[in-house]
Image 1 (cartoon, rainbow, N blue to C red):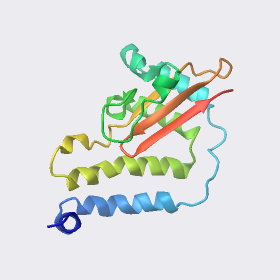
Image 2 (cartoon, helix red, strand yellow):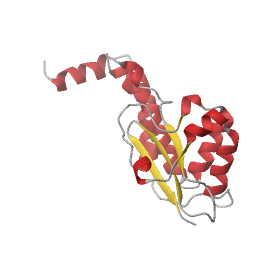
Image 3 (tube, rainbow, N blue to C red):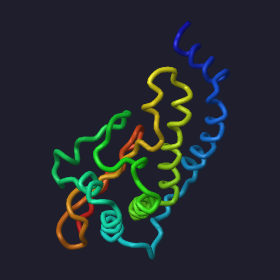
Length: 174
């Protein structure tokens, strides 16, 4: 049996099929959602949103969240399932997650945020598709990290959201 035949059998007969049917329209709507409207105005600046996230997290979590603004730290990324630099989504409280979303909203359009959410949720379908090591398929194994000091006037800083099939990097220099 070749790989294509095996994959088709898993797709047609697999228990993950309903999850894919739910995730695919969301993903397609995000991809086809069209026009790249600018981020909503009137919200906080990226610096203010990042400082709010830093203020919300515990001291232990803060040391994971804040990373040096160095080429070495910012270039250590990968989109395959692995442990991530920063704070994993699963380790964040709901207020911390909301602050992370607010930070992302400063850099992404509404369609971009929808795409991020759809990509994260596709981990559920991938978990159902795989037969070994399914624990690595975790929709909450996405981590956010802040590089440098988020400030409007102290030089460059950045942030990253990284996970399986997603690695978004932003540098702010204002």
